[in-house]
Image 1 (cartoon, rainbow, N blue to C red):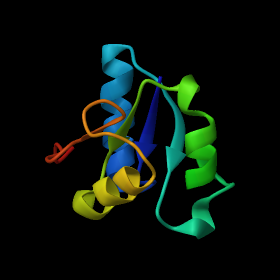
Image 2 (cartoon, rainbow, N blue to C red):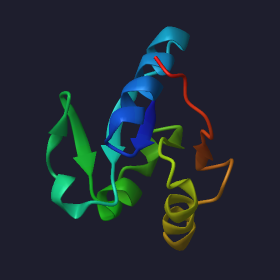
Image 3 (cartoon, rainbow, N blue to C red):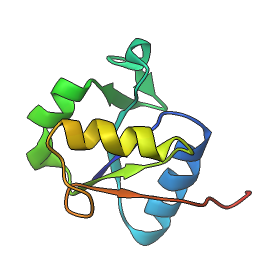
Length: 95
């Protein structure tokens, strides 16, 4: 089970890849606070506080955005560790 950071176009691609390999996106998070508490394609979008409180429910956070540096810094500030708590995808298929 995974969280996708970035409730935008790249999240579709990451979710599709997760499904192919048998993974599942159970939550999303986003830097845009207006998205917190909403659903993205039926998946809850968590605030950063909720992301921390539900840490035992997911394996890793997958950063799915070209703004990954800012997102990595946000997660590190929250106490998350790169490669342990989150991973970053640097390129996405055009499909």
